[in-house]
Amino acid sequence: MAEYEYDLFVIGAGSGGVRAARMSAQYGGRVAVAEHQALGGTCVNVGCVPKKLFVYASEFSHAFSDSAGFGWQNATANFHWPTLRENKNREIERLNAIYKNLLETPGVDIVEGRAVIVDPHTVAVNGREYSCRDILICTGGYPYVPEFPGSEYVINSNDAFFLDELPSSIVVVGGGYIGVEFAGIFNGLGVKTHLVYRGDLFLKAFDQDLRTHLAEEMTKQGVHVHFNEDIESIKKTEQGFDLSLKSGDSLQTGLVMYATGRKPNTHDLGLENTKVSCDSRGYVQVNDALQTAEPSIYALGDVIGRVELTPVAIKEGMALAGNLFKGESNTIDYNNIPTAVFSQPNLGTVGLTEAEARASYDDILIYRSEFRPMKATLSGGSERALMKIIVDASTDKVIGCHMLGDGAGEIIQGLAVAIKCGATKADFDATVGIHPTAAEEFVTMR
Ligand code: NDP
Image (cartoon, rainbow, N blue to C red; front, side, top):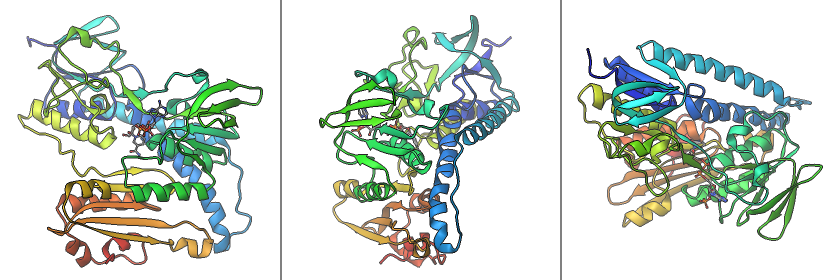
């Protein structure tokens, strides 16, 4: 009889946990995964997937107004929130079932319930103990809302996906991915939208030019953007909420949403029964092999707080499964990870920002193109797209590509391959464009 019931017990069936579990099982491991909520984790249930569906929904309003110049008449429509919400829920349920199948097909046992680590080789779920050679913590994170007078009235991004009704106005707080994306969603769905951010300019990890440009574009689309501003208190009124702002101003609104970052799910996990350590922000600390200070316990995904993106958690899950069950020694390359903010317009980026490049290279070249997208010529829209290429002058290597404009996420994904391969500006120049596209601008910038 085997010493342990399982070779690997995964806690959390989000993107990273599911990938690690099913690959480990495919490689011959005896694997269980515990989940106390819906399969698929944040990305599938209250993150990337439903968010993107909401972005699609909200983009129709721009298409309706653009269509008049192309000959469409009376192309306005009434938006029905319950239809979107219920269709989205159905799609998520379909994906939950697919995740179940993905786990069960290679033979992963799904344990429904909240897991607690009892000792370095034992996990308990619903009072039953499971012995395991290794444990993998993939518990992700949860939305963080600071405490202040009236903070009990605000919703977070999890709540935003299930609203009973759409408010006529909303104040979104936070200048990260979630705040910016949801401000665009609500605005596109016809909600009067304010975005409040405590700093000078939102999306502080991104290229300055794109951040400035996005603030202008969102303002043109009708989002009321407030920088260097914060909420001090919220009072409930008959009509909604009355907000007192740091500047002394006040705002009245139907709903307040906080998108002020996320925190790792490490509470009540039994970490005190192990040598696992967390950093000052509460994230589980791991080495290059994703191993914690307790040799039989590993962690990956949002709970380790390295790069909180689904595709990164998936890469980590693949790497770990190979290490544990195929004798590989994979490590993760966290350089040149492409990412997109599904703002309206989209912001896509890979590699270094101009400021980062200036700080690490002696001599850089910046290629920049700002233009009116072709569609705007007939729609009469005032939007402008922006693209930047950043080049190390000494090697001609492209070290950053940035785009703000329709389809930026799709376009930057392709360029990320080129950057990963070490493409030079000469390689970009030697590439033939696809005409007429916005993307061809990346191979014609001189
Ligand atoms: P972020 O950490 O990206 O942004 C949080 C924002 O809230 C920042 O602007 C921050 O300000 C502000 N903030 C933090 N604390 C306070 C406070 N006490 N009062 C006022 N403002 C505050 O978090 P998000 O919640 O937007 O997203 C979490 C993560 O999820 C992202 O980092 C990303 O990794 C991932 N994600 C990825 C998406 C994608 O790939 N498209 C989409 C959504 C999320 P400051 O800048 O001053 O610190």
